[in-house]
Length: 395
Image (cartoon, rainbow, N blue to C red; front, side, top):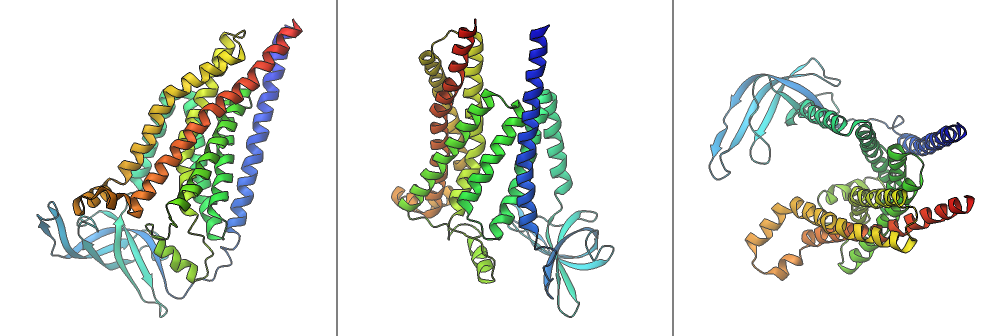
């Protein structure tokens, strides 16, 4: 009975510590959020501006779109549409809208279809609109809902916790990280700080405050740190500044208008964020495996436990590193195909900045995994074996 009460008391203390850690880190995120958004309400709206609002196609007044065999039977042309605005300050108004159709614009709009409008308002009060994109929001939320339901159905309580961690991660990146960059925070240290906090809170939500979670946190933060350092070093060696990346020109224009965003660090910040998930996966796998082995074989020597951890890590290493590399190759497939089409010189392809960036990102993420494996294994052994010795002395 006494042992049972001690177990309940220890469980309550662990739960209390877990709640305290989660609340503390969420408090940090909340403070950063309010700091990043504190000036938004005082921002004066310009006399000329663009808004993106939803609308529904009521009537097609003109349509000269034709199928283009050169563009793999995609439509080319333009349309004149009557669209009823369903959101924003012009909600309820029916507008005459221009719609451009083509491989880079999309397919022709149809009556009853929901679209996103780019509405330009001018200083004299006039406004015009064009079709910006299809309204994919309902389908996106439907897909996300299916993903959440399947994850919870398969993973149960653990699946629900993982979904909660994923939502938190996305909220922090979109609502905290990006606004902080717009206020002039340096991308690399900001990404590393927020990713470290996200990793800790996700692990605590998933497994509570325990030695396993502590080891996974140390391994994750260490692995991400190695990715960051490798990315910084490789960026300098490859002479990559990030100023020729996609949308960098638009960010440079923002700097000219007074927005203090730093562009040069975005490349390595992206490496940190993209490596986080894989490094967390590896670190938790190693920590969980060694904790399970130690629980089943408490008399196993520390050296053998470490050897087991490294063996498990080697098996994980090949697939996880391969996963990262293939993910980046897949994302750059169009670029690589274009390079091969216009040049058969491998050296010329490798010297292109786009390819060098993909190589940097893939290798930096893999370095993070390689660093997390032995670091998590060593940390787990140091945390687990002293506890076993104390227990044996007590008996």
